Length: 274
Image 1 (cartoon, one colour):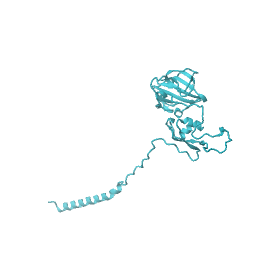
Image 2 (cartoon, one colour):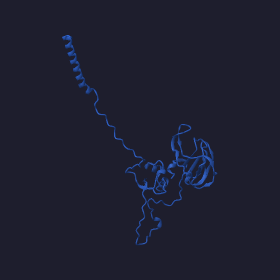
Image 3 (cartoon, rainbow, N blue to C red):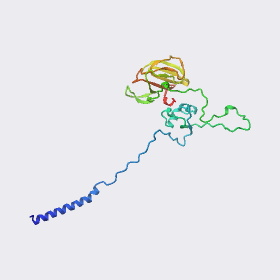
Image 4 (cartoon, rainbow, N blue to C red):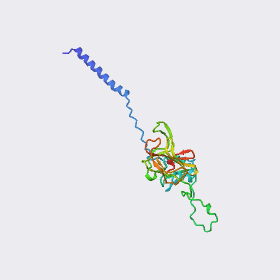
């Protein structure tokens, strides 16, 4: 049998363990972080398509409804607005996405007024040329427009956009002064607008190249051609076959490199094509 001293020692030890256990239960809540986890902020759904930037109240202009056959360039010309500014304020990166019925904000311009439909009881003494044209009705103009150079083959897939990019061959950042359009070898290349052939031949990097000069000092450039069908100083019409798509010059595959230039300045072709 255990002695009385051993029994008392065990009872004392049990009491000490019991007290320490209760102290641990009291201290523990203050040592742990029982604050509930922070809820993540509610996710904000991003719009599926780019939205037109809302112009400030100080910006003068009006809302234009796109009509069938309109292009961003034709709208910019009719209302005398810089095409880059028109694209930027409406958040447009590719003018081929504008559709009939779409709303565009035209900065710094006023809408044209509809002529009155009411018949005057007295004949008007004003000359006919003072009647203002109606809004959304473009005045007649002989100014040209650009069309897709691979229209006949239905090619509109752009494999490389206008602007700064990593050159696929040199692997350095360079300025891409046009767009690259996917094509098959031999696809017919058409004149984007009527004009006169300013260059027809081979140029370093571009391979087989055609440059067409249009009115108002505009130029279109067609590069990496497999075949050239026109000669220098030849007049060409819009939609006329001028060559065939290829991969001559410095090119990673078959495609058409297409440029639009206003004088010596390269412009983004996607802002001018329908």
